[in-house]
Length: 254
Image (cartoon, rainbow, N blue to C red; front, side):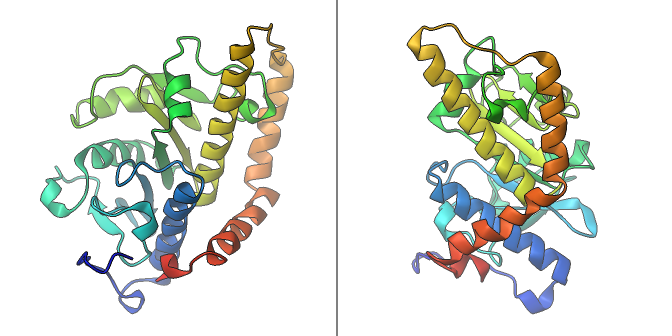
């Protein structure tokens, strides 16, 4: 942690065990995003609904690097606020995440990134193609939202939410990627798969060769298999991701 920054933090003893666990999971998400190289200095965000406070969510303080995020310095904000950046939270991040979490009660975590691979796939009119196992998680489960500028206008929320619908992911055209899940693990793993799928597709398309797209019936079967996996045995990988973080630095847990 940069000792020159004076960052407000909460004490574990002052909040519920459920909220502290949510903070742990979200802090881990930020650190994992940094570890995989998907971060962009202080920009972009992940969010987590606060257990027991459905209209509130946790998000990174604006000025922090992803590697400076900890469980205690995440900011809790209300989805119903018209946020002023004096609150310490980035307004575009608040606009996007507050809108999505407000519209999707089944979603507890959202991850948004601006990687070059994500922005490249977002600029292709044909979008994501079913040419890899990684892509199949999103078969008929990804939406598309046309670019409207920096996401500051609350009026854009309705259009974002309509484009997302009940999907697991949203491709924000010319902008980046968003994944959502019931847990931090689900939202993070979906982003990992979506970025892998984008990279694989772009690599294939660059060859100029014909693509072997997977038949629709196989895509639907496999997408359902993944949903079953993610709600069951798939969760076993989250502790492994956390051990990977702990092997480098445990400060995110504080």
